[in-house]
Image 1: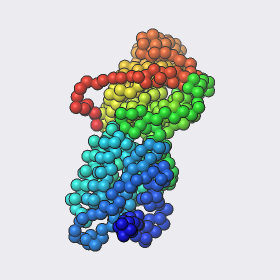
Image 2 (image 1 turned 135 degrees about the vertical axis):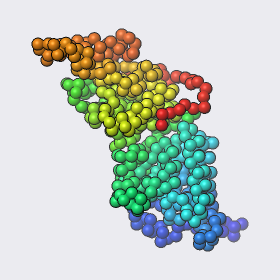
Image 3 (image 1 turned 45 degrees about the vertical axis):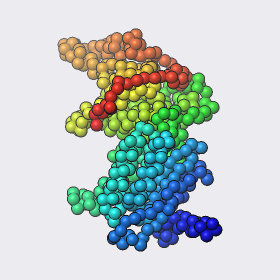
Image 4 (image 1 turned 180 degrees about the horizontal axis):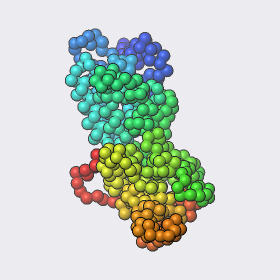
Length: 514
């Protein structure tokens, strides 16, 4: 037995240093953590249980027969985050550059299958160079096995991808299928084809960072949900995100009480809006005033900033926030903001997280660029997402709620359970000024004093058509509320809606306007 134990420890020792000292030193010299260090930092101390540590490839040819390191370039297993079980895999770029081969892929398949069958979140720490060329089609088959598991686990368990190095070709598709993507500034890169290929095919001269860096995907493509300055901070953020999510779609997110009184008045909200309805303000000030401890985890913070989406808590319970941001482009909806919000709404709905919307939207972005880009189709994604959502849904109209954009932003007409408005709310087909110009165009042209008549007609239109009390009279708004009572009312409303049950018609699935 002693000999066998000695042999076992020798093999595991080899596995822990599978890439070799020189490769590990090069890796560390770049300021990066090893694959094992990442797992140990992410998980609660002493909880990681590794699986398939002694796995290695069986490929022949291209010089691989005598190069068969244990782990085959990926560490897999399970452990705990905040005392909740999670499954994890961490690619080891010191072994075959972290490239996916058959055995490598099978290890990921196994841990993904475990996560789905046990109802546990799966966290992938990605640091690899795509498919392993030496293994040919077997490597591509391994990728296919990962992709189909991503799709089948979607909406069943949270899937989180952390990009900690290069992710190219097939390696970007698995993260793209997951719920959230984290990247590290300056060291994470994602692209289908690298700068050299781009230059050869299109003639474009682009750097690695410009093509697929973290900030590119955070601000331009919208691929990255979160960007952090270093590896430890990104892993801390993963832990933070999981605190808002349930382990699977059959559970509720954990309740975390902060000591913030759910009935607390937010008196500062009475003076938060500027004097003129045409002046901007920061919607996030309203959100942080209302939620527990001002704690708001924004998702896609740097992308399509005219809308803000994120997680928060009210009375300790997770909620998803979707709000127009008047500070950016007046809070209009466009292609990017519609897609950003639609994705977030569907994620919350999949994982039983109630939705609260704060509305101040003047309409959709006009122009040929938006129309040619498909604003009709892309805008419909947000409409579809809200319409199909069965979680508790509450809408609060803060200021402008004009036209179809108002309807799309979780209005009562598309299924919001409760809809409230501040006294400053303006609910109409369009603003009073524009409406008067259309409806009373002839009267204004014939008037001896158009400015005076326009002012009179605008005031009349605002009183008769725009006022929130008109909407309240018709039942389109459940109540007009004192802004200071918004937190108290949301807390009570969410408590009421916690027992909400809704069944949709039987069907295979809807046809989302992709």
